[in-house]
Length: 360
Image 1 (cartoon, helix red, strand yellow):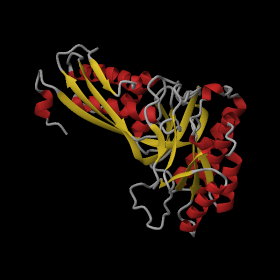
Image 2: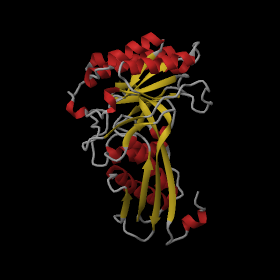
Image 3: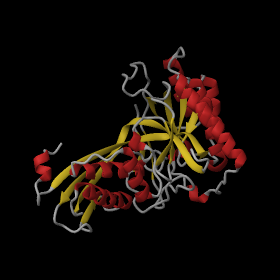
Image 4: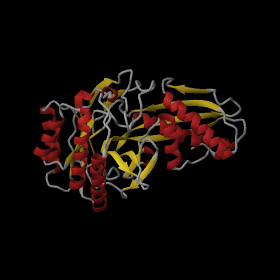
């Protein structure tokens, strides 16, 4: 942390840092009803610790707001977020907006549907707020993130399970304190190639679809409240099947077949990318055998296993978890992973990192 005296000294540079984690696609995504009965796109992400975005912002008091440098220079969404965050924080502090220097780095895989763009944006907003010695509440961070990239993932809420309206940057429902304990064996569908959802047919959800999503919402709420891993797995699988109507991953049936053979409680996918996961109940017997069985079965079906993780990251990782090689995936195409409907549009700042999921 930068000493407060240094930050608040007029005319001197002030530096702040910010970080944001990633997610592993979605547990549930669709169209839901808000408290007023209005339809809105919403999602529940599967949090994953490890990869993240980091940003450092150096405020240059006395410089014009447009004097903002960004490294790497192609992070246009992050640059927009910095401008918006400077305006917000300067207003809160009663200071004139000014320019600065922004540096971003991170290791969230690009193009797999893991929130790499939102991770950058949130890390930047937090870094700017830190430079101003200001703490923005999650609702304010979400509002700025949506303005910067038109829609965002709920990474500003950390690991809380919420139904989040990604286009509006607001929480539709807090589902509970934490997800049921799960072990997730991650994999990459389609060889890890980015999914360009703009090339896919748009799907409009009718009343029947909305009722189905609301039923899944009720079941997920119950799963979180009771810690029922099996019920959560059924919700995630049902949501993945619905997403498959648009994504059409050729390996999806094989993925579900592997889940059935190894006794997984379900599968989950990124609804705007290629990442997917087999969901295991850690309380069921033979965890080590089942995890190893998942990895072998996936690879025998030509689906690369990527990373095994849990929904209880603060707990020590079991020593009997198997490891497997890192799977590198291609760099994102110049158009980026287009996000239709409830997701972010493609932008010029996406082809920046190799899409890579580290091994456990």
